[in-house]
Image (cartoon, rainbow, N blue to C red):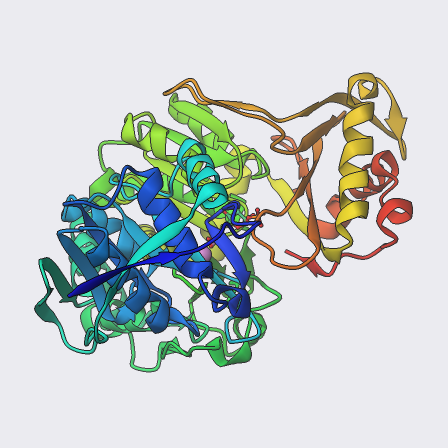
Length: 543
Ligand code: VG1
Ligand code: CO
């Protein structure tokens, strides 16, 4: 094997965002672009010598080529072993599991998650550490520093490795293990949930549709739901991963999973509808005629987790990202366990999970997960719901209503304004920040502000501080508006406005969501001058 040291120069903008480095696919295909970032990652972790890594991705366009490059660079950097999913396929939670169970030094996950795929769409690379979780900010900052001073990268000159069949091969001194992408993940799920109870549920006529959105979860869902748990064949739809996700937007929400939503709101609805995203870490849950918001789903899963074998002894604590609704805090309070509020992005849950402070975590963006891996996990959430449904023998709608009756309802909605000129988006945030100190006590659109700040997170485990994580404005009567800019987009800026209104314990839990949020919405628009500053009235996407 010949190792080539290729001279290169720094490429600007290789700063990982909320979840890895995401760019247009064509940008990743430019000479040295991927190679620079991978070498910078090796450099930032102290080199690849003797190390072992997991590599895999969601199967989008450029996945296989990128994996071949990473394997060659790992070999050239002296790595001892690389574990790859067959055909380069690994869902994000499955990759996290492989890193943990094989005790590797980390892994590369190739995905731009819910962003569309294809040569004219998006690609992404994320490095996860030995705990299986996304690199913390300390490390991503180091990787970014390394991209700014890189002068050369090392790559082996060799043929492509065959990733189509499982088994071991050698690339000079480096072992390349091609593994079944599903087997170990499925084995893990079987340790967490009561598969017999779920099998009985399906045997008794329970019906379901799982929409894999032509993305990575298809093979996982078929193997687990249909082949193992006995769900009717055809339960999993759009189950073959495609390079362009069938030209769809693999984001499991009522907008992008519209077919599933329509079915679930119709007379032909099965008992449960679910969907997952590009890389398999998000989930959507919808019962017959009843969409479950991700924030509610987190709270309901936390409140009922003890019904599944893995969580029968209870939870250590619950963490949610700051923009996620307070519904899960109410559950933590009732259970007498700790509740944590972290910045957006799964990397912030890692320390709390590693320290055993929390068992379940979640985000309003359809991510839920537990201490079984260090990523959010779409199918895990679906299986926990199934386990709960099998034990409680009630419908999704009944469980949700019962939850609201117990805790009150946190009406919730997120507005996304996409492709806003970066300057205008920044202007809105800057102007808001400047006002924060004086907001409490002022009234906007008839709602009084009770508190306002910019969220900054003090990690209770390692003491690190993450600032500028979004503006929070609390209103009298239990309303809240949060403003932040997305860190996963690849074009312009996406402004996210998160609206929330608590019903109170004895309040009306049967209102229309947008109606229940209209006062908070009006106040949020007024306090930020939103319409004037970004020249938009309606968001592009409402979830
Ligand atoms: C979004 C979501 C965030 C999630 C992140 C990665 O980030 O809001 O909750 O963790 O995507 O999810 P942002 O910065 O665009 O708001 V995934 O499934 O795209 O890896
Ligand atoms: Co994802």
